[in-house]
Amino acid sequence: MAENTAENGVICYVRPLRVESEGELEETSPSASTDFPQPRPAPSHLAHLMTHWNLDAASALVASMLNVQPGDSVLDLCAAPGGKSIALAQGLWPDLHADARTPQGEITGRLVCNEADGKRQKRLAENLNSYLPPQLFKQGHLVATKVVATHFSSAMNGLLTGSGYERVLVDAPCSSERHIIHASLKARQSGNTAPEMANWRAASSKRLAKTQVELLMTALRVAKVGGRIMYATCSIEPTENDGVVEKMLALVEKERKKGVAWTVQLELRMDDVLAGQLEEWAERTKYGWMVLPDHPGGGRWGPLFFAMVSKVDGR
Image (cartoon, rainbow, N blue to C red; front, side, top):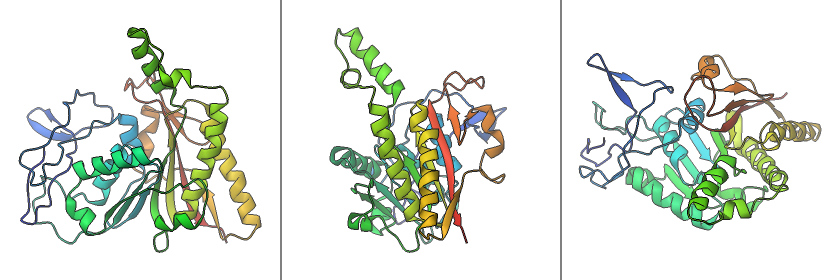
């Protein structure tokens, strides 16, 4: 739920899920299974912002693992339709919710939400405006950009910020097999063929992997030394997952030979949010983790692959 909580109209845009347990409210774990109602405009909002966003738990897990903190500079490189951006915003501005007991103070931090495709970028901007307080836009803390990020050029100036981003999410375009299967089954019920299935080609994964590597390298270039990049896809194709990370590692090594002063690390830190619990919901891969609907944990999340990349001083 969300309601006006401050004289300046800064209001709740999303509320963490809580459940009743013996009469007490508790934060839910990612393994909780709850049916959510459809989002709706909250009449108590000054801006009639939407009450909540229903997000696959694997996607919420990825956003949580980035461990965004107030004051961070954050980039969501492939942000449409916006669900993960809103989850990242919760880390940046945790006090902008209906449960806040103190008046809202100075807003800090910045979230840049980028989407290269025109139609998807328009939808992204609409969703962000529907869920996030207008003050964030007016004060420049929240920006929706339309930059093709597959090659580093002058167009990238719109994404650059100071010494770089503390956190970058690359939720890369992928073959999304689950979406294709769902679309195909739905179309078959009406005697049709889903465009997603008709347009699928065996070479699609190789083409997508090239784009994914370019996006991941862009993320590394705009991140600050000490920053962290989360690479994720909803594909089960190794070429688009571990294969992309492996190619990125090779490219970084080439950059090192040319004299760049940074390198990368892949291991999660022990203090990372949920790091010690990942095996309850995901399986290890060569370079990252895979969340699958048939995991013994029983969450029925995903599929979703993710790998955490840290940009570190290489001197």
